[in-house]
Image (cartoon, rainbow, N blue to C red):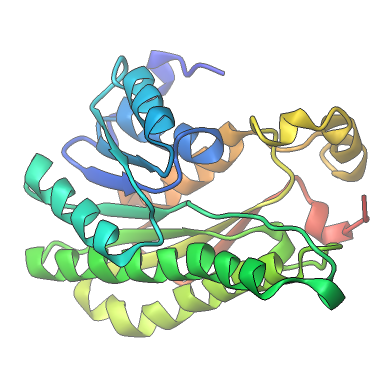
Length: 259
């Protein structure tokens, strides 16, 4: 879905944002919306070709720089924040969107799968927040952090014990950082999407019909739905909102029917 120019503001003019895991899906849509509303966006993805292609598409609408690399690697995270400062002189927004889902039954879930989920979903988010916060504090300008949780961090789902656990932990991290970072004018929030139609989920021919039936509002979410919530929480209009989680799931967690 394309945004009409007359519906867009310049809410992010002069802002610099880093978004991880943004080569497609929700992350891509967040980057596109930020760029179209005036931000300079550093778009990260572990797939270099995907990052370059995505940034190229967004660059037709606003300023977007491809930053391929592993967002769970501390050295890369440091370089990503440094590049944001090199590109524009400052950093204002950091969105930890990168994450992986490794399904598996609890009783035979492999250690390597468990630790990979934690490394990417928790480690990548924790240390991006840490590096970005250090830059915000150095600038003395405040800033906004946003984490990407999931409805499965609120309601149990088959074969997603490790994933759901990691997403719930991100919401608690945001709460703890209220204590640590509020004195510096930094707000930190979380978005928790429910079933969302992306390139990955579209590969399942039954996905849309199944979640349209299970979702009270009658359809699964779209990347645009989640991006709208994410961009609000990192906007100046949300500066007095911190430590909160906004669930974007069409009401699924209220009733929680199992697929």
